Length: 175
Image 1 (tube, helix red, strand yellow):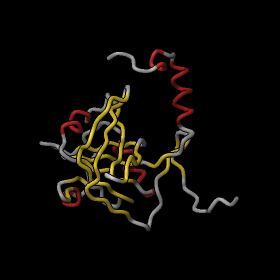
Image 2 (image 1 turned 45 degrees about the vertical axis):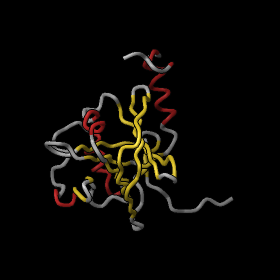
Image 3 (image 1 turned 30 degrees about the vertical axis):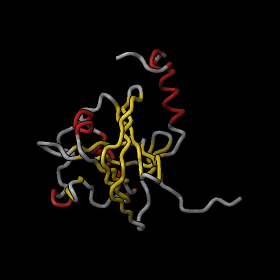
């Protein structure tokens, strides 16, 4: 694969500095889930999720090209974005690893709704059909068309900032 950005050729210190600078942007955490033709569903943790369009309803997330589930995500007819609550840090850690036990202890009946794989207890879910994929350097950018969505209003989001999970303070900012 050809280098696709100025930082790819940079030394490790410059890449680490770039990554640490990116970490100054607080993000929520989501787990992307999708069915597989055989075996356990796909499940990967991402911090690169955001809205694209209201009409049509589009979202995007990006996946590292080294991800073992990338081919399955590219081939699927639908996936879900599960926005995690702060009570689901264990799920974020579980789905961030490349292992075969990601789905251990998660009720199979609760996983498949309308053909999409949903995590129980997620703060919000977006069920999507593939809309577009784009080259994003060392990542693939997925754009999904939202076909169903739901949200709970009784939880707080799992937030990542400065390389650590953080608690969100509900206090409003005053001018």
